[in-house]
Amino acid sequence: MSGNETHDQVTRRPGGRSARVRADVLRSTLEALAERGPEGLTMSEIARRSGVHATSIQRRWSTLQNLILDALLSYSQDRLPIPDSGNVRDDLLALARLIAAYLDTPLGGALARAMAAGDDDPDLATHRARFWQARYEAAKVIVDRAIDRGELAADTDHALALELLVAPLHFRALLIRQPLDEARIERMVDVLLNGLPS
Image (tube, rainbow, N blue to C red):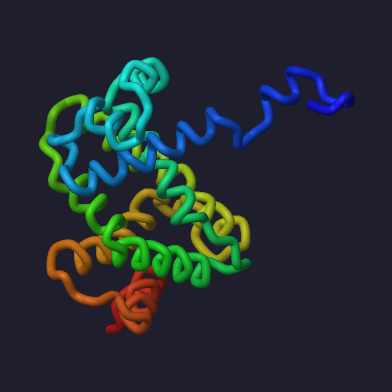
């Protein structure tokens, strides 16, 4: 500690031990979730992988579901930032490309399959709903900005617009296992914005 720094400034410095521990636990959670699915995940397994004591994990996140939610949201925020290009079509294209790239990675695809295949345990269902609600809240700014610019009607259904973007991407990647090339992504976005040609 230098003479100009207080103890509080040093202990609050970001990126310290606490941040490293959190990053290790979240990374280990994602890896275990991708390999085992939500049903096969335990605090003990995450502790073993991360090298962090299970009681420390329990103290910080309280429940396994809270930990899974934090890991998925953190990963999504890092991998799927919300674009701001200045027009709605480019924003939707950029977001669709990010989602397609995410689903094309081994970890992203495995996480999406794990979330989709998880049983409907009430706690897991609640946390899954919280995850998607958080993603909606982050992405709905795309629709809000488009409304403000006059590109979309004021009564545009935010959730429906985002579902119409995200669902076909997941359908192709997870259900029919077909590629998501640039031409397909552009067609999806254009149909979302303009409807099918008559």
